Every structure is written in C-alpha cells, then in structure tokens.
Amino acid sequence: MNNNNNPLHGIKLKDIVEALVEHYGWEELGKKVRINCFNNNPHIKASLKFLRNVDHEWARIKVENLYIQTFKK
Image (tube, rainbow, N blue to C red; front, top):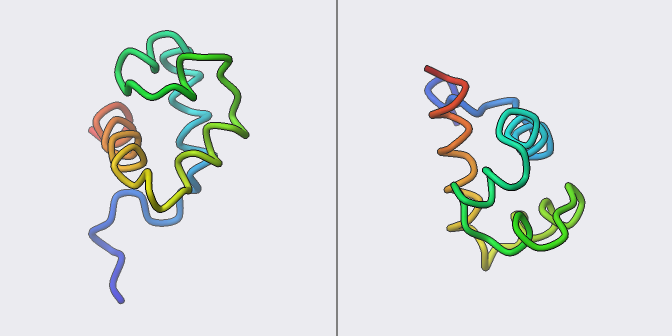
C-alpha cells in the first residue's frame, strides 16, 4: 500500500488532536468540530477514545480534515 499521497501518513491521532487544541483551544475547536468530547469537560484521553471508535469515523474524518486545512497548506 502506497501512502505517499496521504498527508497524514506517519502522524498519530494524538499528535493531531494536541496540535489542534494548542492552535485553536478547546472552545474554538468545539465550534469547528461539533462533538461533545470537545465541548463538555474536554480531555485529550476522552477525545482520542471517542475518535478511535469505529462508529465515530465521521468525527475523526472532520478532525483530520481540519488538521490538514490548518497545518498542511
């Protein structure tokens, strides 16, 4: 499998979430990606658990796309 065209290749989800929190803060991140784990008592660990859940793939995609838009210009 060739990952040369994947802009997130080699970047861990934890690093993505931490970078977004550092850049935007929890409040702004919660406005950009409207999920409860960013808006109600936000924590990295809880956010990662939510985003890694297969049923919440839509949320992970939104977070990954925001990371790409923010940092991979």
